[in-house]
Image (tube, rainbow, N blue to C red):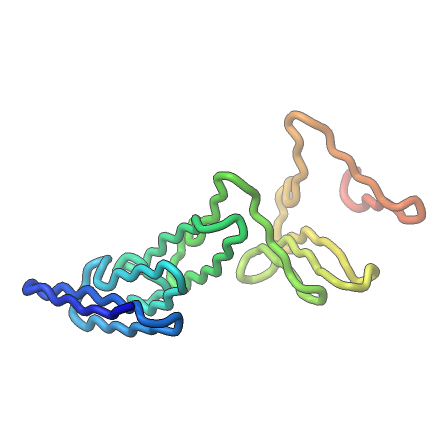
Length: 171
């Protein structure tokens, strides 16, 4: 097992550690501005990177391209603090589903920053405290909340001892 350092006359640096499972390499580039200012490959361990206002390697503008292709159990954690587009974070699964989970006692909420239009799953280990909400507090359109099925039906069921309540407006 060996460690090697190769320095090309153009300034490129290649560093290889191959002495023990606890090998660590720390690299800092204070002058490079290209998307590949630091390119790292780890075949057995992880890689932790801090780049231009982002965590993990990205384009110099801060865009993040992330692809997991190691195992069926891959996990990815993503935070975008600067993106403002509808696709600031886009999740795409080409061979499987996308699952979102929260611990009991926590909420899974998708909505706007003001939290006046949202979809919320309130998870709980106590059945009576668990619920699902679709809320729009400011929408005034006839379809402020719409449930539409263009090819199939809509089925609303409740437990035999519970009510299905539809009230207000024109029913």
